[in-house]
Each structure stands twice: as structure tokens, then as C-alpha cells.
Image (cartoon, rainbow, N blue to C red; front, side, top):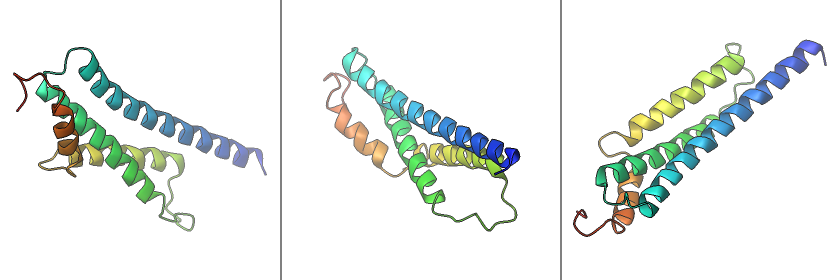
Length: 127
């Protein structure tokens, strides 16, 4: 293996690790936001609860899109863009996930999470 191939493989590995770390941070942030609302007395804010549920749905949809994209074989493609294309594709999936989850109906996961968590809201602010 040449030095150039070795550097390319190391660069790709670090790009993948960076992408995974960002994804895990986003997922953890959504979960922590919902937990903090329930535990820190902010559980009466319906809007914040719905936003957190939509963020969680967005993370879920992003993970689904990433998994779907990995099933595509790009090894024979002469138009492969390497790590830059991987970054772009991941950002595209993230934006698509946000648009899906913050759209009119999303997948319905945010609504289900909201309804389940709304039981923890104080009686005067519950729907």
C-alpha cells in the first residue's frame, strides 16, 4: 500500500469517526432536552416539548436515511467524490430529516412522543 493510499484511508476513517460522533451528540442532546424538561420543572412548556419530540424524530429519520444510503454500492462509480461527497451526503440527510420531521405531519413519531410525554405536564398546561 502506498503512502498516498494509506493517508487516504486514514482520512476516510477519521471522517467516518467524526460523522458518528456528531450523530451521537445530536441524539444525546435530544434525549437530554426531553429529560431535563421533565426533571427540572420545565415540563409545562408544551411548545418546547413538541420541539424536543420533533428533534428526536429528526435524529431517528437521519439515522434511517444514513442506513439506507449505506446499502448503495458506489465502488464502481467513476463519479465518486470521496470524503467530501460523504460529508455532503451526511449533511443532506440531516437537512432532509429536519424537513421531514418539522413538516406538516412528519412520520408521526414526534406526535406519539409528545402525547406520551404530555402526561407529565402540569394539569393546567395539559391539552
